[in-house]
Amino acid sequence: MSNENAPPDALKAKHRAMWALGDYPSVASNVVNELGGELVRACGIRQGDRVLDVAAGSGNASIPAALLGAEVIASDLTPE
Image 1 (cartoon, helix red, strand yellow):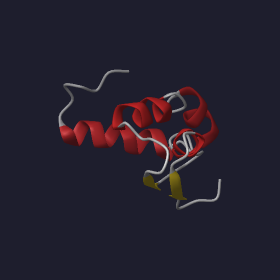
Image 2 (image 1 turned 90 degrees about the horizontal axis):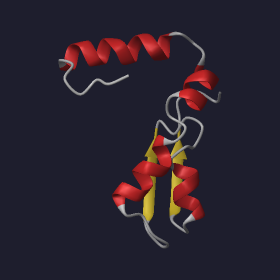
Image 3 (image 1 turned 135 degrees about the vertical axis):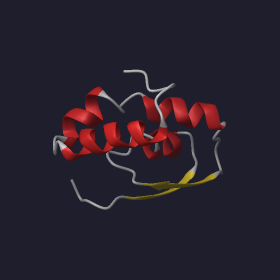
Image 4 (image 1 turned 60 degrees about the vertical axis):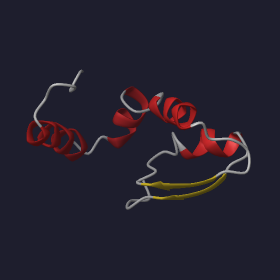
């Protein structure tokens, strides 16, 4: 699912539709699961760094950051 060339409004609409499906566990495991670790690596997060993960979801970014020794604060709108 590549959205590199999608106009911003079209990309927003696709994301809105995906999250509106209400099947967050499926999205978390099938779509964004591996992206958190990639993001942590791309950002060069290391031990002692401070990380704020807003819309943390399942913790797919905050958990890898914490495992590297970063100080992590994670927040999400829904408890699920």
